[in-house]
Length: 301
Image 1 (cartoon, helix red, strand yellow):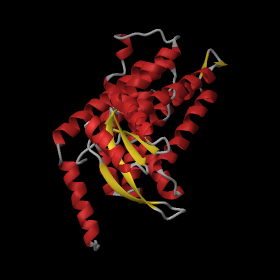
Image 2 (cartoon, one colour):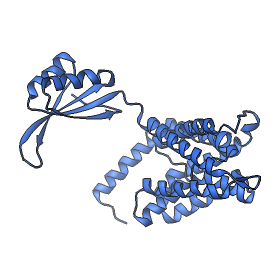
Image 3 (cartoon, rainbow, N blue to C red):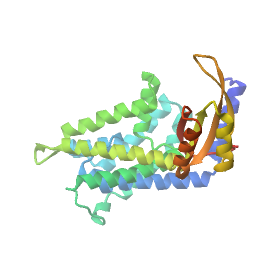
Image 4 (tube, rainbow, N blue to C red):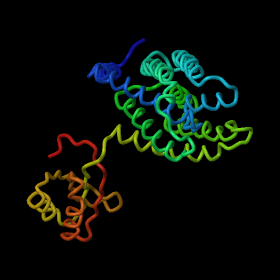
C-alpha cells in the first residue's frame, strides 16, 4: 500500500502527538476511567438513571433481565472492541483499547462502593447533578488526552462511517434512543415509573456535556474582540495606550460592497470586557464588534 507524502507527514504528526507526554496521558486516562466508574456505581446504577452509552444499556438490561451491569459492560466492551478491529481497522481501534480495558475493570472494582458510601436515592435531582459532574469530569479527562473509553464510542464511529453523519450526531441519536428506551423497561414494584428518571437523566446529560467542555477547553478567562470600524487609529490607540493590550490588524473586504476595511483583533481579559466594549463604542458608536471566548492564546501580538 502506497501513501502520499502528505499522508506520511500527517501520520508522523499523529505518532508524535500520541508519544508526547505519554506517562501523563495514561495517568489521566486511568483517573478518568476511575471517575467514570465511580459515577456509574455510586450515582447512576443504584438510582436507575440512564444517561446513554453501554453503561446505560446495562442498567436497562439489569432491570429487564436481571443480568449484572458489571458482567454486561465487560462482555459488551470486548465484543465491540473486536467488531471495531474488523470494521474500523487497527488504526482507529488502538485509541479505544486502553479505555475498553480500564473502564470495565474499574466498574468491577467499584461495584460495591454503595456499601461504603450511601446516598438517599429518593433525591434524584441531587443524584443527577453530582453524577453528571463526576461523569463530565471523567469523560473530559479521557477525551482531553486523546483516548476513548470504547463501548458506545465505537458504535458511534461505525454509525458515522456507514450512515455518513458526524460522530457528534451519531452520539446524540444513540443516546437519545437509549435514554428514551429506559422509560419503557425500568420499573419498580411492577409499576412503570422511569419517565421521571428519564427527565433526571436529561439533566445529568446536560451537566455532563458542560463539564466535558470545561475540562477539554478550560474556563474562558479572556475574550477575543474583532472590530470593524472607520476609526481604526483611535480605537487602536485606545486599546494599546489606555488598556495596554496588543492589537493585530487584519485586512478585510465587504462581501457585498467589496469595500476594503481594516479589522482589529485584540484579546481582552474577561474582567476588562465591559471597559473595552464601552470604550470602543464611545469612540465609534457604529463599530461592529464580534466577541468570542478564548480558552488559550499563543503567539498573539
